[in-house]
Image (cartoon, rainbow, N blue to C red; front, top):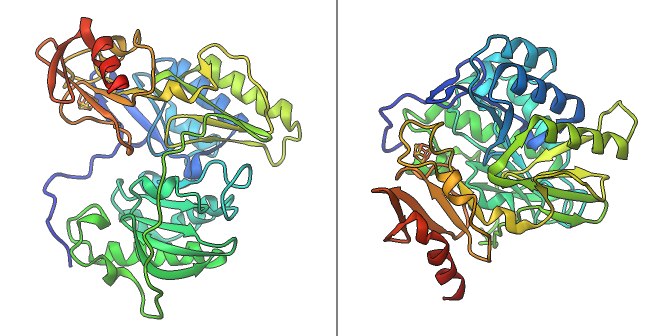
Length: 379
Ligand code: SF4
């Protein structure tokens, strides 16, 4: 049932197995559901300052990365903070959940499901061999994370009932909320046992063969939408740093703000890292912090790490994109054709080439990037 086989090894980085980037070892820390307490944010900030490049970089799966980790001790510090609960499952704890669930909008409240799945995942030894690219998602019915390319997604259709999507496609398998974790791990286990050399459910020729027998309803093609979760949402706010890079000082501002909003330390109030590189602060209604914007427009221009962090990059893409003012056009800047970190929604493709950029197919010098984007705004 699998095709076609991948020949390269799964090289997704973690903390125990870092990626050798041009700016030094890169460590990725999984945060299932994007959930992280204020206390753990401070640990990440301290690790970034003491061991890495001083910043924490948000990823498109609601995880975080530390770059330039040239000094030892990261795994020990993160383990002591509870951020590495299972070394064997470290790289497979990739779980999205609608970040505003239970706070603003949505059909169901999916809070807690990502943590329940994480605990059950780590308790099953066989699932340690899932590929590091495999992705779980819990969508509260609004269609935000359902559009993020998860291998298996539970999407709410009522407050207590959901449907299972495989690679974004409704299977018609209706599953109650309380059975969602079991159902998703049943699919993941079947995938591990039958996947051969493929990494993603989308690569299988018969993904429906992963489902157990039983009644199915007619699949429904429900809309998805990009919702960057930036702005004011009732009793929560969502903020975004430019290019998903948070300084250690900004992380501490965020940690202080959520603790001030809910001072009881146990259970600590979580912050939510979204797959759109924004940060949701429950209970917080305002935040004065340089470089953290409540304007969703800050996410219109995204960029891969580029030079000097990536040896493949033909340009310092973030430096080239930084002076450009967002104006209604979503554009992703990439240092090479791999286009790492590109958003899932519609966007303008801007790829470094020959001392400039190919913008939507047309070569453009750096000096004319603003003009090229403005043309798109008005077209
Ligand atoms: S798109 Fe290319 S240059 Fe940018 S991070 Fe990926 S590999 Fe590096």
